[in-house]
Image (cartoon, rainbow, N blue to C red; front, side):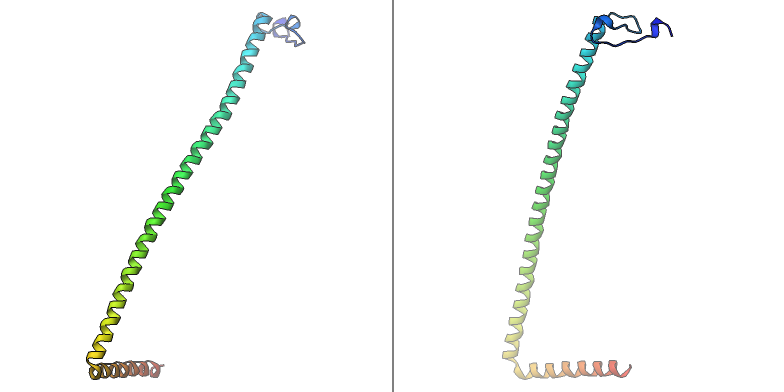
Length: 129
């Protein structure tokens, strides 16, 4: 290989010969500008990573808030439905009590008839086995 392809690096620019034959002082400025660029890129990368982390944290917090709101809404709806069902059951129970008090003989006859019907169905089911 000839001197055009020769590269020697030493302590200072006076012992450095570039393959392109450029001025050694210019090569050292290029190197410092590259180093500066890399330093800015890596520090900017850390800032960008921090910013991305913060953005992800904000999105996660928003998602958590939304889930908590929806959970609260669902719990409220469940409570309302439970209360409504309990009220309906309670009213039906009270109406049944009132009807039994008003018509005791008819209520006993209905209970007797329902019991007989259940007994016949159960007897037939066990007999067929």
